[in-house]
Amino acid sequence: MNNHYKLCPKCSTEAQEESLICRKCLYNLRSEPLLSKDINDTNQIFVDSNTRLENQTSYLKRRLISIVLISIYAIIFIFGNIIYIQKYRLLPALPVGSTQTQINNTNLAWPTEYGGTLGVRNTTQNFTIPSKITWAHTLDLPALYDMKGLSTNLIGNEKYIFYGLVNGQIQVISTETGALVWSKKISGLLDSTPIIIDNRLFFAQRDGTISSIELSTGRVLWENNAEEVFLTGIDIVDGMLYANSLYSIFVIDIQNGETLWSKKLGKNSFLESIMSKIFGSSNAPVKSLGEYPATAVSAKGEMLILGTTSAVKNIDRQTGELRHVHRTSWLEHTYIENDTFFTFSKNEIASININAQGRWWDKVPVLRGLWGQLTIWGMAPPIPRDENNWILSAGKGNLRSNIIHLKMPAINKQTIFSVHYDGTIKAIDKETGILNWEKDYNTEVTDPIITKSGLVMGIDGDLVLIDMSSGNEKEKMAIKNGFINQMTIIGDSLFAVMDDERIIRLD
Image (tube, rainbow, N blue to C red; front, side):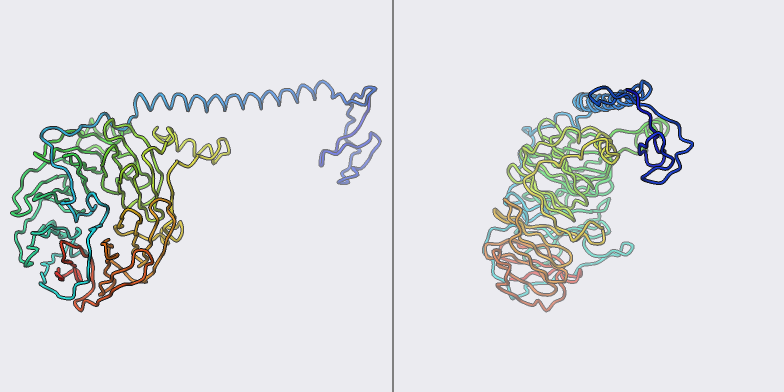
């Protein structure tokens, strides 16, 4: 049986063949052609051959597009993984300790910027707030553009205290008397705090020089000119010094300064390769994982942690395998303890286990970015978040103006104490990431130091001892000598920088 009807071109409503106006939208149907459809005895509708062919063609097109997209995804993942395995392993096998590299970083190295083997800025000793200023050492402050004062943290041992100035002058004073022991102008600028091991000082300079200096005399033991730019600190483990420049990573024997191994951390583009041939390799720009390093390299056990401006990369220290990539923004500190590494960013603090399985597509250049674009276009699912122990939001928002900068954290067996430039102190459970307590002083505070007696901090001109379990103040003493910029504990004495003009010892 054949039925005729009209189809409204405006709202696609079917109308009877004698209809003059669409009953739904009142469109004029007088000039619309008649269409037909076949209905059998069971009232099943059969479309005409042209409509059926058009529907089939549309279905096949959609099916073909789906098959093509699935094939593209499969090719990307299969060949991307093959390319990563064959070509884009970040590092080859790294060197291990030799008979020449037997010095190990022990607790004798504390205090350094990283804290030694027992945790960051953790003395594990009893402490009573001192009340007597034993001596004061006045800093000979140079001016470099609009900067003045110290360019490093105050570090030292039982005999000597080291500090660096913004113009590249490094000085050592006596722990006992505060008298100047020696002063030296280094070839480059020092942007990060060195490491002290026994009577030796290790550091990397902005001009590419990596040095070892005798702490007691200032005598240069060795220098390694890497011809790179070092803006971050170093780490030492198993007798090897690890340093990351803007473009490369270096592994150096701390006994003699010999480069055991180094490698560029990026691949030149076609244009950069041409520039390299024209101007020479030393003048050609080289990418460093696509971005600059944000923190010092951290090495311990099986892990080698490289931090960039948007990611933390966990590398197997023995094989060079890139094991895990954790995406984060504005990274400031990293720290390794046992089989876990901690990341401290302006907007989050995270704990990540060595066994966290990063997604392999993070390891292949441009692949994650391609996936992100496909996600935006609705052609791929959202990128899964990497596996980790916990992540705690540390900032007040996502905008740069609302992000709170972190100072050097302090860590013991149970708790992470993070301090922020706005005067906020957070006590975070190290196992779970739960915030135990928070205290806001609404002023600038110093990096914290953990003692058995409590958390020691400088707040304005006050020296404060805080109960680590509750955040309540246990002791407080006003140092009537200015504003406390930074401090460190050596033995039973506290050494503080006041007003960026002088160093005092309190007993």
